[in-house]
Amino acid sequence: MRLLLTGVTGFGGRHLIRVLASTPGREIHGGDRLDPERVRADAELGLRLASYRVADVTDAAAVAAWVRGVRPDAIAHLAAQASGADALLDPVTTYRVNALGTLHVLEAARAHAPDAVVLLVGSADVYGTGAPAERLREETPLRPKNPYALSKAAGDALGELYAETYGLRVIRTRTFSHTGPGQRPRFALASFADQIARIDAGIMPPEVRVGNLDGVRDYGDVRDVVRAYELLLLRGEAGQVYNVCTGVGHPLRQLLDLLLSESGVRAEVIRDPERVRVRDTDHLVGDPTRLRERTGWRPDIPIEQTLADLYRGARERVRTETAR
Image 1 (cartoon, rainbow, N blue to C red):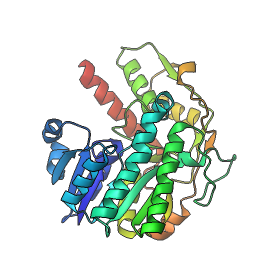
Image 2 (image 1 turned 135 degrees about the vertical axis):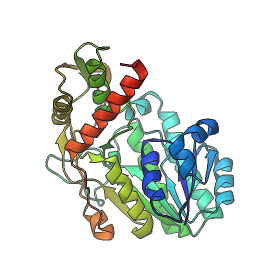
Image 3 (image 1 turned 30 degrees about the vertical axis):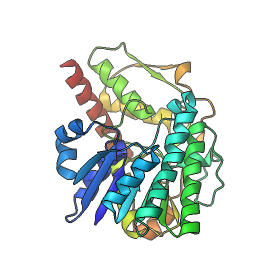
Image 4 (image 1 turned 45 degrees about the horizontal axis):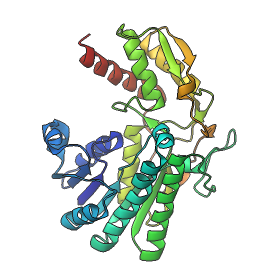
């Protein structure tokens, strides 16, 4: 099986490679914006990739040439501008990467790999906000509330169009919040873990700065999430969309408390207006029934273990940076 992965050096991409490469006979071709020398020097990526290409998904000709050269049996499109905060600052770039980038991948597949399975990794942010205690299903109308969500809704719609109009074997996900080892501090829980690790190392005062902690999110472990992606590549129904989620909501305040408990660090929690996102969602919890029934997938890793591993990774990174 020959696979092409966009966004291969990112958070989800690295975890997906580990899962895909664990089965013999898979030839994985990755692309991202990271310099090839850095990729070759990266033991994990260098050993598991059959080839690597500097790939900007906003460049239609480059994407087409890449797909034409690899001729993959399956494509997993993970490349994205994934930060909601960055999207608010630069909605144009976010839309170009997330919407037009998806269009370029679909066009390249239509022209040069029409029989390939194309997995489009989307976001549950397209639903907007659910009602308290509601578990959102795939039939729920899309109500994107911010530039990031809008860009992902556009990519979702393009995937549906290319499946129905051109017969491409497109499978879409609406992936809910997830975290785990290796996530950048640009995201909420990873930011909390990074701040706590720096407090523990004595290089920050005992204050954790946060945005809105009242929201409820369906948080999964990235290692469970990429298992779902692998199963969808193998068993997903072409033209269908799947929620990738646990079905369990967690208040962000509760998750921060768990991180503090795991670390043993005592710190004051300070609401920082600069970290509060406008037009954020209040309650976003999904229903994973369709995914479970189609693939048999269930999350294996409890949230407590996810947070412990997230904090352990943050602490190791901080110690490496500071030699403490």
